[in-house]
Length: 253
Image (cartoon, rainbow, N blue to C red):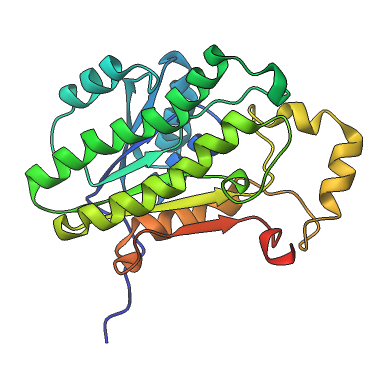
């Protein structure tokens, strides 16, 4: 019986939105597991911090410009890549808290354009490279608790993240014959630039902590192991699934 391999040696991974927060944490985790990581984002200068973190730890990373909200930028980024691509992490996303009655078409299109449309076309571009290489691969989509529960003032965001779950399942079913696994991670309450408006409210934080069985908010390192696992050969028989890293919130509903 062969022990599953959790390492990512000799694999190349592209992470969108890798300059901070969850994207940065996952990029560092994949590099620490042995992957060569392609760090992407709109602000190339902001990616240098992540690259330095990886390099200082003995890992390997390079920087590429990518705006997932712009289909032309997606096409240009993937066309410039050389060599095989084994892993894609669709992390880049945006949110703007706004009451549903105040949501306009511009905000709706911006959020859905980045979070859902952008993730799809990055997955499509990555899958083309994986199929051409004939070696399969792993795609990891960053979903959310809002993929499963309704959150007031976050309707476009919740719609986009719920859509990601459907996209994850459909792509997993379609690309399985090509050896491409497609899964998702659904973070619970993690403090990031996107969620900062919530954490600025002390009463909100107090209420949320009472709903988390593990009685604390998530830390970035809590996402590292699940991400590496789902991208590794240890998860070779897992596809079309979303792993919720939420401290037990959904289990306690």
